Amino acid sequence: MQRLLAFLFLTSSAVAQLPTAKPVPRMQAVPLPHHVTSFQLDGRELTAFHFDPSDRRPFCYPIRTGLEPSQTRMGHPHDPHGHSHHNSVWMSHHDVNGLDFWGDHAAQQGTIRLVAVDREGYEESDEAASMRVTNHWLRVEDEALQMIEVRRMEVRPLDGAASWLLIVDAEFRAPPDHPVEMGATAFGLMAVRMARSIGVHDGGGRILNSAGQINETQVFRQPATWCDYSGRLTQDEKGFAGISLMNHPINPQNPTPFHVRDDGWMGACLNLDAPLRLLPEAPLRLRYGLWVHEGVPDRQTCEARWREFTELPLADLSDPKKK
Image (cartoon, rainbow, N blue to C red; front, side):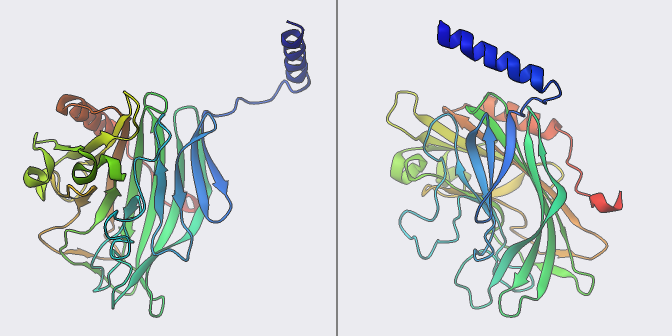
């Protein structure tokens, strides 16, 4: 009792001395050493954005709910070298102006490098935290600029850490001196490498898409508005979790083909069957969502979350310096 009274006295005394002190936002985007920003709910990390210039591309890792392990992993469990580009949650593309930004060991290699965080690039509140950056897609050989990307990532809790959204808004623009040719490919743009225990092959997990199709034999490269990958994450009775990767109606193709494998990875194909051409005066605007959740949701629940995602207002990606 004496300790409680002392604590209450100290607290009230501090408030009296700092009457203008503002509440601490529940959601924060916290810059950390070595090119990392941590997205935290009440001080606990849900995910972190990694953008070390020595990496081939930025990525998010870990992806956590109230369960401690990450729902994603770095690399393929059976081919860590050949699939070293499977960086948890990432955006990339196999063919931009003939360069491979998808893999790590191409003869004509590209790399994605964060070049700027806006002066007002961090936003925090009780409802969400976000980060806005500019990335340059470069040819590794001479660092020639191939494409300019503005990306905004928002983490928005729906039910504490047990259910939350990672919303990725992006605008791709050609440099002033040449167009961008994005070749038709199954590899790009938004991708997720699930934890080994969640994979269908290794862990007995489940793939489900918006058409009600199940696992790779039915889901592979089929059009869908969302695709959910769920499975066991811990040995606890309720140790199940997953991620729904959601395509937004503003994207060039919706429903879009999903490239999904029983070995634990899924990606939403931007342009599986036809190339895309970007001109400097006509940027490409995209939005993807990841619903990170505990449990194994049914089709109706995933569909409801997708609809909620599509009803959220689009982020403003315009240059704040020009407003």
